[in-house]
Image (cartoon, rainbow, N blue to C red; front, side):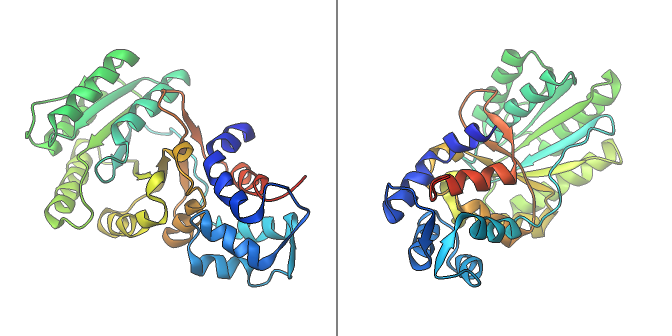
Length: 290
């Protein structure tokens, strides 16, 4: 697993090495370390907090302890303890929601769970078509309708269908909505309320998709989603395609929400459970010798 995070952080570590040099060291000057962490897209104020108590020459273990403090958030585990276990996927346009749903369906199927998809992104016909293609590829049922139909109705029908068929997990796509559009946020609240009418415990998880290439700039949009509907956790997409891997520290520090998964490629199997220890080791790998 460590190799997965090491590979996913390749671009981030390349950016770090441009600051600290290609030759790995046992100790790094604190000022140089500060510059490297900022280059990795960790927020300036958080960097100051991290290095505040560090000595002039910083060893790997000292930095590791400070980085670990940032991830003092609830454990990010999905325990399927109800049926149908309903997961609502939310986020802005282009973050990778539909592809992430396909990856989650692939993961759960491999774990022996039955899955149904709900195409509640009725704003874009392309989103319905894309999710339908994934349903065919993964051989899972899907509830869908035409473009511009009521997304809350699709949500209700998906959960009702899961209940009737005894399906373990319902994964529901939603329209990519700008975090500053009040009417779209209200629509999302309606979807959640209707989900509860279909099954009182639904949705069990509301997961926010954040595009890793946006880095720390995604924090403000995430805050609005969390304040509007309450988010249980985060999935980071495209981590392998960005030099902003350090932004995960900023995101967790600002939102106090756990990261459940990270996307490290386009294939269905390229979704891995987030492991803070392996992620931190991946960052340290770009800074220090063994």
